[in-house]
Image 1 (cartoon, helix red, strand yellow):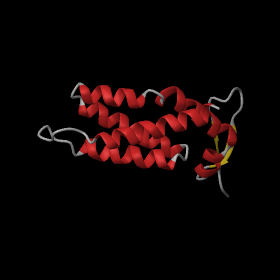
Image 2 (cartoon, one colour):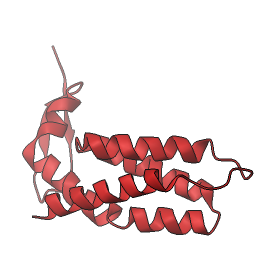
Image 3 (cartoon, one colour):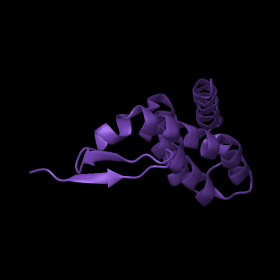
Image 4 (cartoon, one colour):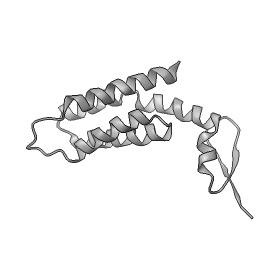
Length: 124
């Protein structure tokens, strides 16, 4: 007998029952995916600006954390191209040393352009 769990996700007064190990059904639910995408826009729209600011302020730890969070959330909403760009940037920032000249501009530009595309598409 498979047990069910109630998953409460801020979608009004509704809650949904899913088999305990069926996270895929939960994440593919249109109501949940729409909420995740709305939350993504609210929390990640300024990420490129914040990453650039952190790098300019020599706060690589914060820039790395922002890229990591963007990567994770892009994966959650199935934005695979953005996930790949954020993962590349995250790796660069993880391996960044103070003796390196600078972060490759192309990695930042790729992430920034794809993030803008995703935010624009979701917002429509």
